[in-house]
Image (cartoon, rainbow, N blue to C red; front, side, top):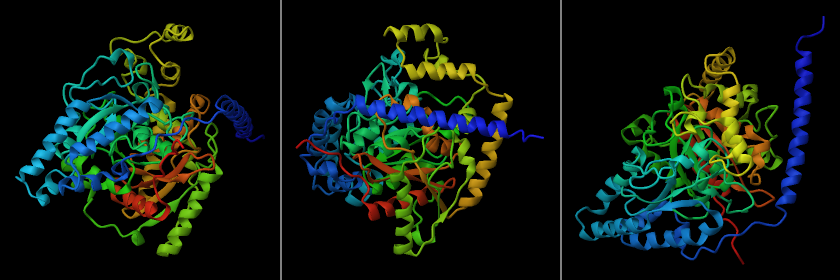
Length: 529
């Protein structure tokens, strides 16, 4: 009797072959379309832009710099790079300058000594940006949706409030994808954001404008949100650090769209993006609020006592690009460094459950009540998907093509509670238990953040499931830190993510700091000659 699995294997090979042909063809096409090199960045004129946020804060506290000086430097930088990049889509420069002057006055008044300032207002006078879906009182909160272009936030998101309390000053909002549901930052409200390493390439999404702003030194640090890789992919494509925290540690209140279910809330994480690894821990400590004790962030981490595992691919998902050779080589370099520097033998694993990453993410994101087509109508009824596609074809739709495609795919695919849904929820639960057992309270997994460096604009439409390398971590509800590891042969950033067990964020961040010391971390974008 013929093996019943044989036809499926043949079909799988046919799908794999066809996807490979499509990817090869589109890669060639987009290289031809974007055959001219993209714009380079203007040179950095003020070296304070290169410093970590913690270093800037210390210099402000100790009167080596004023907050007003720092604010002027970052405002000037935004004005210099934004015409090319379109990363900052709304600003509050005037109010921020007044708040910077007030911070300087507080320091001059000496009502709090330096030690007290460092403890109670560790980021006093430091400017930062956040994505246009996290509420900043008095600023727009469009979330990239045309129907929300006039929405003004009435109060700060919890994370923004905590950062203000710590003395940090919001200066602007950065671009995102429509309703944060795609991995290129482009929408009908603000347009498209371009990569500072080559403006022909994407910045990722949905926190793409934020990753871009950090790489271009347009703010001291940034805050993003991540439900499928929306912090880590932009950090990867733009060569900076980004951390998705453990579930329920950082409040998601003030993020829009809001999670529909508690399970979706467990997938979503608001976290920092920054150029220097030293900023990750202090920023996480602030935005975690009273929950920071759950993370034991003050406990010292000895790299030599961490168990390291690594896997350089998902072992062959059918509709996901293969991991580039230059990214796979990074794992060999890291393993060699750990061995030589710390006598650590990193263990290579080949967990085949990663093959179903995008399926597990897609079905675990299903909800019993809310459909994406309702969210595209700003929760006032639903959009008419066929009609919007017709409008898009003639340039009259308020929505992006990928948003409409997402709504259509959700509508026609198996829904919440279906047998397919139940199957992938069960598989996710099994995988989560296995990963938690593997990592314990002293292990980390090094894993690709993305299979390729930043593709050209619109190219993700032909490889939509490449986000699965980050998305799987969200549905496993584990913390992860993206670590930049230099540039590839095309001059584009590459790196890896470090995954830890729940509430073990301090381990992935400690590894990020170690790898930054060993390999250099953030590399500034090329500048105009």
